[in-house]
Image (cartoon, rainbow, N blue to C red):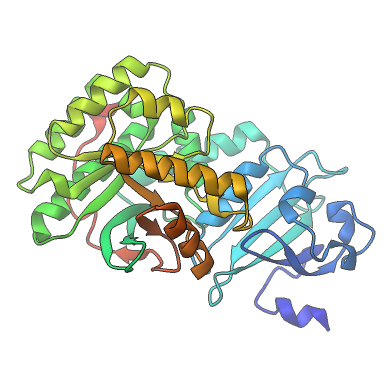
Length: 368
């Protein structure tokens, strides 16, 4: 029976079970297809779940699913579906990272949180985790695309609660709290590099909100200067999840950070409409292409042309170019042909927890 394919799931009350690949293509389905407005489960097979799943935050679900590590899962509530709403749970397979299991459940027998309460929960959980340093850091290698030799590691924060950190970070940005985590990450990375010595290089993320505040950038600069290490070993990735409105202040703050010796790169490049504008005004050291460039078929002419053009520009300007979400050899070849010299993804290594990363305790109250 098809149900044996879902034996790893303890969610017996789920109305519809689906297995899909990393591109969102449904490989198998069992249960009530009405949860996806279809006549039968068989009708769903070979369909694209992210096109069929009609919810407002489909982009968030896609990004959160892609960010899951092996065995992790995350759930979303869709209160507008049917009479009672539905819960969507996504889990990345613990042994085969190319496969996801998705469970959809009608919420008539469950309590559903409205959007305001969900937001409040995410903010409260984020605030507590950062204040109590109840965090872990996972290091994922970024490699030279051609050889696979490690260039540096990105530090990815992990919260003590289940699932992707993306919804909690997004809620913290909307609440104006994300700078607390930014300061903590930069200080911890600088401390790590001052302790390990050698040739280790690390990259950490900071938000577009933080880069627009000179007072916060001053705190980041002090955190860097207070540690004895070659600042060129620290890379700050400027995320595009928060819009940069004050571009002049942001540009000055990027220059301020770079004056310490650290490198600054644009993260999520291509995910939003502002990427090219940021590249024009911000004097950064490189770009990291969003995984969307590799999320479609390798023969996507437009994506490949964009990769080639921007990677060529980066080479001409002496900037680095990283392609992320590289999960297959085909992905690596796509980057090589486009001239993208650095790569990150499961093909080269999954994030590995560094239990000692947050051993240094710092105060972040100045970021309020």
